[in-house]
Length: 299
Image (cartoon, rainbow, N blue to C red; front, top):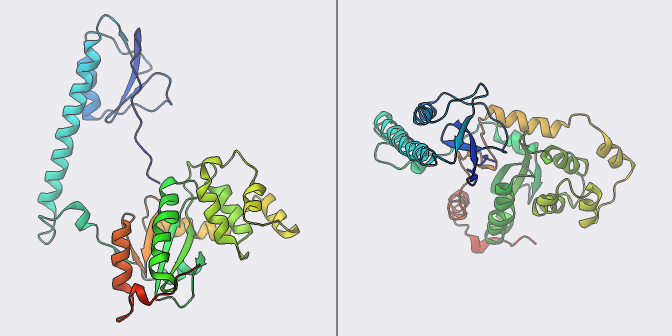
């Protein structure tokens, strides 16, 4: 999952303690970050010079008597951000190959073929026939809200349209800063051989807002699972899980930078495709003469 930017807080009527980092002003009371000396930060700090003196910690104390200075900082920040973004886009357009010039950024984000994609797919948890003509591999984080939306909404639409012509494969790629993503992945792997493991994945994604607030056994009970002695030992273990480590290593090797990451018959997308894009890609990947009307709907 791509982390959202920090959001600016509301003004304090008395004082303002701010850090300036890239394009973000982070008010007092938020998490501490390292101040960076970007051109934007330098411009903003110059605007503050004279009205307040930076302390050793890198903070700047603003008083009520000069509230206009913060507005000035924000105006400068927005202006510099706009100019910087425009310069980056112009440079990218000028340096792009002739075949890509004049095309949108999204149009140039073409999928790339992964030669050993079948080995990657074999490591995941499959839903659908082994002989399905189209296989969609999902690199997923169980705490990622974008993964939930793609898996529960987009993939459900694909399954309803194409049925058994499409199989999906769930590959673990827990993001380090998601506290419960790895434990949730471990729970799934403990029940990998269960007939309802895909229902367990769905349940964890749907109820991901309660991860860490409910015991793992409650998620298992929701899909009718009760751990036997071997599975209970697996839940209590802290050893590394090969399938999870394989997914992580594959993510690094393939240069995946966020979740969900989607691969269709070996073609890895640089961003998650929309429902319309995915429908089009699956339709083109189906054998000649086979349409979505020919597919058997998977229950």
